[in-house]
Image 1 (cartoon, rainbow, N blue to C red):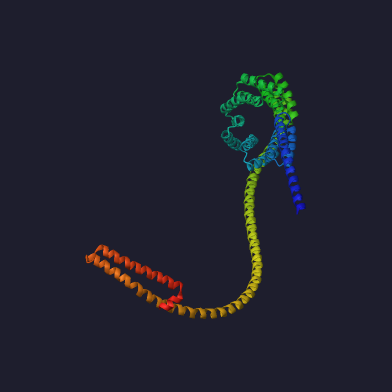
Image 2 (cartoon, rainbow, N blue to C red):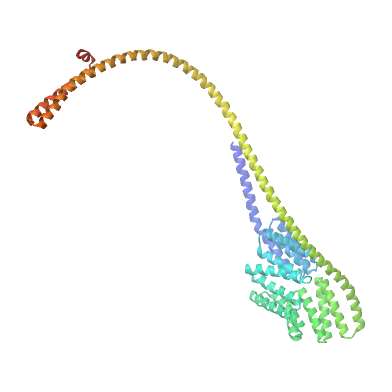
Amino acid sequence: MSKYLYLAIFLLLSVWVRASSFNDAMPQDTNDVNKLAKQGYDSRLTDPEQTIAYGEKALTLAKEVKYSKGIGEAYRILGLGYYYLNEPEKSIDNYLQALKYFTEINDKQSEAKVYNNIGNLYRDNDYQQSLLYLNRSLAIAQKINDPQLVASLYLNIGNIKYRQKSYNQALTYYDKSYTLFTKLQDSINLITCIQNQGVTYFHLNQFEKARQLLLEANNAAKVNDLNQIVASVNLTLAALYIARNDFAGAERIIEEGKVYANIIKDKKLLYDYEYTTYQMEYKRKNFEKALHYLQDIYRQDSTLHKTNESTRINLIQKQFEQADSQRQQEALLQKQEYDRVRFFGVAAVAGLLLVVVALLVGNVKRKAKTNAQLTDLNAEVSRQKDNLDRINHHLEEIIDERTRDLQVKNRKLSEYSSYLSHQIRGPIATLKGLMNLEKEGLVGEAECIEMMGKCVSDIDSKIIEMSDMLHNPAKTDAKV
């Protein structure tokens, strides 16, 4: 017995030590996941491929330690990486995976971030769908009071208004965003905000203000190695220089922008630079070069148009797949709930059956034991019956003898009662008579008391005599 006890204690200690070591390791592992995710996020504007590499490492580690929030964030980082590489199908796939994990753990802040990212993904394909996701994210961000996310959403909604050519509304959102990012001291997003303001002023034909803002954004982006922003800003600066007939400045900016676009491998930006170069050559009246660029643009435009249409179709398909997946997940959850209820029902019935079987087995054993006891009791009862028969026979003899004796005693008692009542009745009658005479005043009080004393003495002597007779039956027989 003691051997099994020691073994059980050893196993419990082993499990406890393992659980303790696992719990100690978990915080470090989750911190590593969070660190990788942050590194991926920080490199999105400089090297999107590096963002994907960090995201994949974070996802692998998060799955190993079963860190749901980390898995969701890793998928989000992968979505961002593919977004900046202009691979929207892969991007939406990862965003939807992230959203699934964040919904399961009810992480509203992370849900809002994913809605923001999906809104940006639809920015160039479906303005209404983009605003739907961005406003959904904004409602959550305002509810949980996340100023960083609110500022980002103002910036992104401003981008949609810009694309809808509502430039003044776009500037209103950019101003709100700029104010919040300034308070938060977020230098990276401030650069993006300044860039968007410059682009908007360019379309409002306020070229000098646009140039100042764009140069400020360009210089700040270079200092912070924000390659994507530099490439994007240079595109607008080139268009601005062309509008002002500064072809040398435009050519210099275009070449620099192409370098940065190649670094981040952004095919769409490279196409935009080709089109801007065509515009420059055409305005310079260098028609031969302009025609050459136009032919290249036509070929690229056809491919890009097909890609954009394919992207749009794929995004719509992903939406339907997401809805279908959600329906399937709900159906699966209902089935799991039904299976769980059925399992517990079957387990309860099985448990009850086991209890019933145990009770029946116990009942059979108790009956067998009771029957054996009853057999022994019957034998004992038979023995006791024989003894009782003998005792009853003896008792009948004793009872007969006692009955005769009692009859004699009852007869004597009756005779004694008659004698006693006769002896007592006389003195009592005398007492009654004296009391009546005293009431009527026929006898004096002193004489009455004296005579009552004699009656009492007579009664007392009779009682003593009765006591002697009770304790001495021989006297009773003589008197009677």
